Image 1 (cartoon, rainbow, N blue to C red):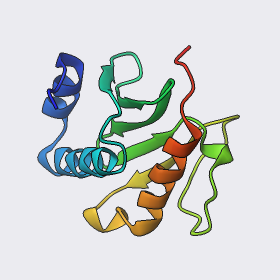
Image 2: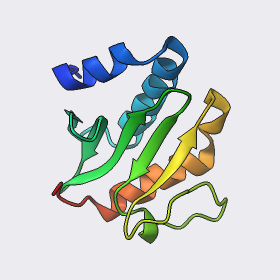
Image 3: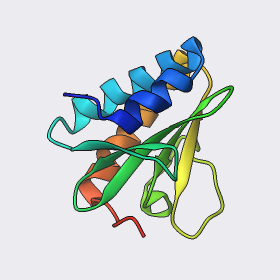
Amino acid sequence: MATDTITQELLDKAPPEIRELAEALRKLVREVAPEAPERGVKGWRLIAFERNGIVCGIQPQKSWVNLIFMRGVELPDPQGVLEGEGKATRAVKVKQLQDITDAVKALVQDAFKLGGEKAK
């Protein structure tokens, strides 16, 4: 899959260890939903994946990467890995490759079953 300009800019600005985490998350999302379009959203500094709107997104930070779920409050989270207190979104904070667990994969799978929400 080709990388759009905004996505490439987000990855290029990230430190190497953060870029590695972001790429590992991109790979995971592509494994779960290979047909899902990927696009950079500049204002949100987000690499978004879509199915009837944005389902989830990867947001590189200085010391970690957020894996954001647009309908996170609706996802089952038996392992308690989701964080956040917003009305809809929740995120997994990924600080190392070991944080990308089977529980995170299950969240991505469940998120794509739900589908996305249109960006406002």
